[in-house]
Structure formats: structure tokens, C-alpha cells
Amino acid sequence: MQDMNEQARRLLIVEDDPGLLKQLKWCFEGYDICTAENREDAIAELRRHEPAVILQDLGLPPNPEGVEEGLAALSEALKLAPHTKIIVVTGNGDQENALTAVAQGAYDFYEKPIDTDTLKLLVDRAFTIAELERENRRLQSEVNASPLDGIVAASEGMLAVCRMIEKVAPTDVTTLLLGESGTGKELLARALHRLSPRAEGNFVAINCAAIPENLLESELFGHEKGAFTGAHKQTVGKVELASGGTLFLDEIGDMPIALQAKLLRFLQERVIERVGGRKEISVDVRVVCATNQNPEVLIKEGLFREDLYYRVSEITINIPPYREREEGRLILARTILRRYAKSQKRAINGFSDDAVQAIEAYSWPGNVRELENKIKGAVIMADGKLVTAMDLGLQGGDAADESLNLREVRQVAESKAIRVALTKSYGNISKASELLGITRPTLYDLLHKYGLSADSYSKKAAS
Image (cartoon, rainbow, N blue to C red; front, side, top):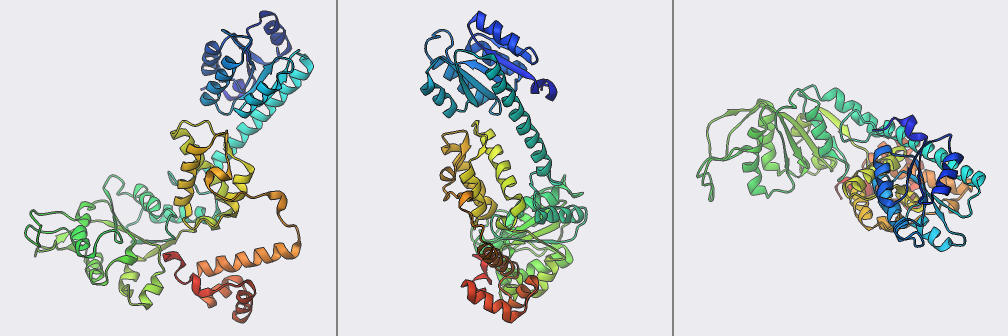
């Protein structure tokens, strides 16, 4: 890896005309210059020296009169170093090929004959932009740095979640993660395990909603040979497999009520019995649970035991949905984009303006999982250097159309605050009005004003 200061001053000149190459070297003597006369040498110099800016003739050997080799060099260079600023030099009046080069990712173009003062101004500006972008990426990576591996905590809500994870992880306290589908509950459960003294043990996850009711008990506690039809051998359950480590019960709100009593006994006594067995087996395991439903509503509806709720929620961590992570929404999207672009070996630099507007405006009902899916598809579909709203499958926005009328701005903000409060309180009017700092009658008036219904939020997390 090159020293950052050296790289920031390094210019690669790709030119096969010896006279012009000499003139350009003299013009840019203040920079650290490396040179090449053809595509192969240019790529070799790029790999070796990692220049911040490349000044490249579009007409290169073996056919200096054509542009095929120059465009191929441009494409290959950008795949290797997508952040490099490449200025292509074209023949007089050859704007069509110049525009083609820019469309393929060139930073700018310059037409011959060469005016050294003008070209120097263009190159200097390219170095300035490259340096600003490099600093922006550095600062963004610092913001992205999370106290937990694999988790981008760029919003206040997620930073608070990460601080709770760090405090809870060293203990054996049973933890309940509450959040909508796609908010990253399993990722956080794995973080609890990874930061705990049990990190060397197994992390065993089971989705209580994905396994048929008649098989879930066997999956959890195991079974003895002959316990039921098809039980041809003794099988160890997930709880035993997790001994010494962490057991993650995902979607615990969907656990059948009959099985909840056995889970409660296990949590209280830390012993299990396999299905069809009589022997009590002691298990040393840390339990983390998660649900996308409101446990209090489930308890009122008789679908979840209250005593079990208090047992699994010794510590409760509420995970904010993606739409509420406003200050970190775009940072997370860019982080995911970089990861997928790297894995797909695509030279994509970021999001277009309309994509940024679309990401900010969209409600993201599927949360981070939906964001990842859309970005993964966009990385594959994108034709240019930037992912557009169309690539994401979203309706593009236009910042210029944003209203500056204070009445409209206030109404938008007011409506949004009410929706967020209803979401956080699961449609509970008393709690929502308390969060908003207004009376219940005032909230009812505002609901009528904006055509909102508290009932539609009562089970929003489960939908």
C-alpha cells in the first residue's frame, strides 16, 4: 500500500509521442510522475504506483489513430482503481469519443492541441477532487466504525443499541431483542455471543416460526430412540448443542403456548428432558430471544405466557427500524453498496442524486434486509459508475422539488412525528401522546387531520 501523501501527488502520464511526453513531464514536474506508452505498461504502472490521477492519450498503440485501445485501458484502469481520476486526451474535434470515455467513467477530457496552462489547471483540479474524496471516505469509515463487528452504528438509535450490547454481553442475563423483520436481530444476537465469555462455544439459532409445532419440541430438547414414529435414533436437541455457548430463539412470539411451559421450566431450572426420556439433563447455556411482535399484545390475546415474558426479558433491547435511523440511513446504504460492489468486482463509486433522494424518501417496510436485497440487485444491474433510483427499483426523487413552504414543511414533520410515535408505542394513544408531549384529545384531532389510524399500528411490527 502506497503512502497516502505520495499517492496524492502521483500522476501517471500515458502517451506514446516522445516529444509530447517530454513536454508533459516538464509541465507537471511538481508532481511525482510515472509514465507509460501503451495499455499494458499503463496498467502495470497503475498497479505498482497507485496514482491519484492519470492523464491518458485516447489513441494508443498498436493503433494510435483509433480509440479502441485507449478505451480498453480506461475500462481496465477503472476496474482496478475506481476512485482514480482519469483525464483522457483526444484529437482535435473528437468530442464524440471524448464523451464516450466520460460515459465509461473518465473524470474529464481535453482536446489537442495541448495548452499546458489549461491542462495543468484541469489536472490540479482533479488532484484536489481526488484528495477531497479520499478524505471523505476516511471520515465516513470512521463514522461507520461500530463497537460491534459487522454492525454499522451511524445513527443515535443504533449507537445506543450497540452500547447496550457491549454492557450486556459479558453477563449471562437472558436478553430479548425487539424489532421489526429485517432489522438485524440475529446479527445483534451473534454480537452478544461474540463479545461474551462464551465466544468459543457454539452459537445455536432456531426459528420458532419456521418449524412445525409437532417438531419444535424435538428440535429444542431432542428425543430418545422410539419416542415417536420416525424416531429411529437418539437425537440431541438445539439446547444441548448450545451448552457452553449461546442459544438464540428467534421469533419466540410464535412459539406454541403448550411448549412455552417447558421452555419456562428450562429457563428456571436449566435442565431439560428429551422427548420420550425420563433423565434430567443439566445445560449451561446463555439464552437470547427475539421477536418482531409486541409481547404485551400477545399476552393480552392469550398467545404468550406473562411469566415466560418476564423470564426472557431480563434485559430488553429495542432495535429501531431502518426508516427511523435518519442520520445513518445513507451511511449504511453506502457501506452495503461498497461491500456488494467489492464482492461482485464492480467498479461502482456510489449512488446518483436521484438514488439518494429515493433512499431517503422510501419507507423501507422490509428494513435493512430489503435494503440489502435492492442494493445487491442494483450492483448487478447498474450500467454506469453510480447506482441510480431505477437500478434500485425505486421512484427517483428530486431535491429541487422539495417544498420550502413553512406550513407544508411543518405538516410533513408533524405527520412523520406522529407516525413514529405510533410505531414506537404500537398504536397506544396514551404512550404516543406522552412521547409527542401533547394531550390525548390533541392527538385524536391530529390523527383525524392526517387521516391516520392508531389501530393500524397496533400490530405493525408483526405484519
